[in-house]
Length: 167
Image (spheres, rainbow, N blue to C red):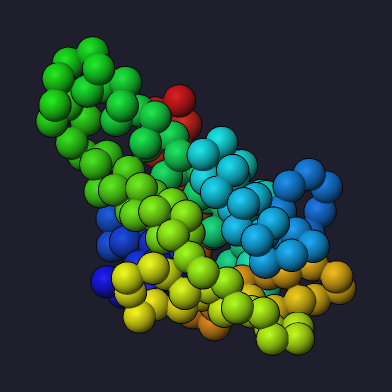
């Protein structure tokens, strides 16, 4: 399995669905940040999810948009399958599956803290999620997601339009 966060970014880009502020987001411990990330994924709180990353504002905007799209696609797929049976809403299954895998990966980690750095190791995998402590809070330090890619605004607009159409 590829790194969970890299996979999430890549999957959303392929499907073209695509500082810590008030509320949930980065926490005082790596465990709290992980818990807040899981809650943000479930609720679709993209801002809280994005605030758990060491990233520029463009990257945070894209991360937030992907989080919202994943949560809405998951709920939409569940409603479609409940109403019309398995396979209904299949166009959104990829996004929902990536979201499910991300949640499973985050839920099954062991955490090792070494000063202002932490490593979350995904159980049964060689994948690791790196975190750093900045300003008293712990954030994911994922270089692949730290800077918004060229053309990210179009991806954000597409993900937001898709999210709105499913809501």
